[in-house]
Image (cartoon, rainbow, N blue to C red):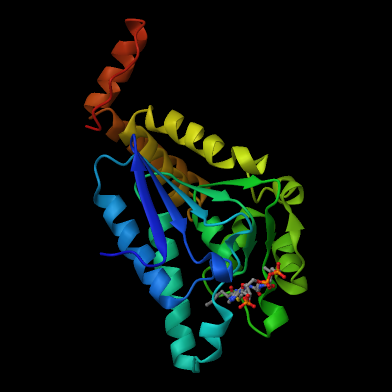
Amino acid sequence: MELQNLILEKEDGIALVTINRPKVLNALNADLLKELEAVVDELEQDGEVRVVIITGAGDKAFVAGADIAFMSGLNPLEAKSFSQLGQRVFSKIENMSKPVIAAVNGFALGGGNELAMACDIRIASEKARFGQPEVQLGLIAGFGGTQRLSRIVNPGLAKEILFTADQYDAETAQKIGLVNHVVPAEELINFCKGMARRIAARGPVAVRLSKEAVNQGLDMDLDKAIALEADLFGLVFTTADRKEGISAFLEKRKPAFTNK
Ligand code: HXC
């Protein structure tokens, strides 16, 4: 598939996906979301790729939201389909078997913040700004934002963010738990690549099952969730990587994981 709205680069087991519509601050339209879905499907199948990083082109925006000009022509049924398209793509990102890091390099507004929230880990540049400005347009968040935001920050804060359309700087976003780290703009991608490399060096099945345990467990009560953890802990003992990881520790050498 020829990519019109995205740039995909792969290096040493790390895929860097750049949302590439800088003239409109990387706003998301249906074509872009379909391309993103195809790229996510490809990366899911790519056995070489261990970690995915998503960022925005240019120095101003990660993604400034869904494309407002595109949405202006939608009828209610088309609007629902657009919402469902974005939700499907973002759920695929959330449920990928490999970790996904959002490198938030500027505005992450509306659908942009929703994309970042579908990623496992959010790292912000000092220039990043976050918010859900939909109510300013007479809309509501529609790519999962009402649900993911209230799970990531507390529900009261989520409602404040959704009701006021206020923007939040990177430091505030970190304070409320929306982002893990804030780094200087020029260091953002290298910081994310460094973290991706550390993750890529760990046991791939163990990383995958850790993600599965957290994601699935969040929707369960604690007893069921820790039972799932025990099941996955047992499962990881079927892997060659578990033998290799433990042997390497005991033999005081670096493990050579095979993803098996
Ligand atoms: C389409 C957009 C856009 C968007 C910016 N642009 N955001 N186009 N959709 N979401 C375009 C502008 O029209 C402009 O085009 C160019 O990008 C540069 O933007 P400026 O406004 O000139 O930049 P600046 O003054 O620096 O302001 C930056 C900004 C502002 C604060 C981010 O652009 C802004 O408020 N954008 C809209 C943010 C927003 O409301 N997002 C939520 C969308 S709703 P021209 O041609 O004039 O140069 C949403 C719903 C998701 O996301 C769920 C859907 C189901």
